[in-house]
Length: 370
Image (cartoon, rainbow, N blue to C red):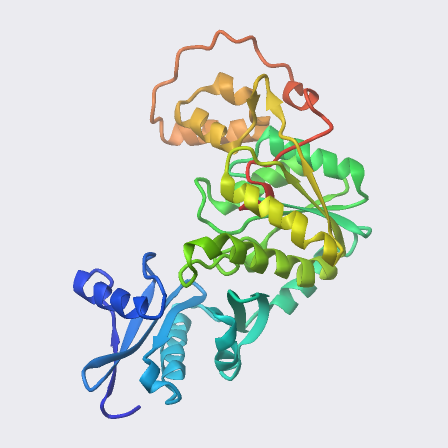
């Protein structure tokens, strides 16, 4: 390293240091709104020459002054960040960049695995890869016939809507893969969400429940920090769905993907629209189904969470299967929180009522699991 070049760790609790980084990144059209796990700056003769950070496996916010390009400063930043990631036990790395900059990271050992034309490229390196994940997952489901259908679900938590959608896919296909979003950014932790789906899907002999891994609906496939607001939804969908259609679906013999229609969330609705646009030309049929309802109310994990926070067990009986309700009751015992609400005047729910109202359709809370 040049004797006039210093590498400093950013104190993320220091307003002055983070503002300095944010102002520097703004010159390159990059944002610094979301707090990273770690950040560094390069200074040449005391002046900021470049910066970079990471959050989990994702390298981000990489920028070098235009007048210093070609001096290997990007490599210096990436090497410093990856060294710290490795020290923290991270051995697989993603980087997002604009398509015109992808070659710089290819020279550092990264391989491009997905792209959104004009907007973003996603590259990876390290131990574990997309190819390895596809091979291992394909081996795990090798006993199932093909072609297969797929559902990508967050299940936060598992509801009667999720159950109905799985039942519909199971009835209409020889084999179904349910990919539960692994990202632990939900109200309920991944391990609990995954277990509830596994328990709920046990009754369907042709259904296999799997973790989504790092390549489906993750921080890696949904970048935001270097995209303009108006471009974010398009890039998110193009990266995630392009990766699914071009790499994951062929590896897992997936020819059909199910999702529930979305009357509430605009982002999820756009994701569904993108599915219908992106997947069919690449050989994956998209089946979007109406939501299951309980009376006049749609079944949504949002409403399940609201009812749980109120400890409204009568309302939950119309929204969630028994295993989810048992799970929620166990949580309530650990943290009593609100007192039990007054008993509801509604008649008791008969087993299967919510499904029987619309057994031909189903709707996950977050279709496409956005």
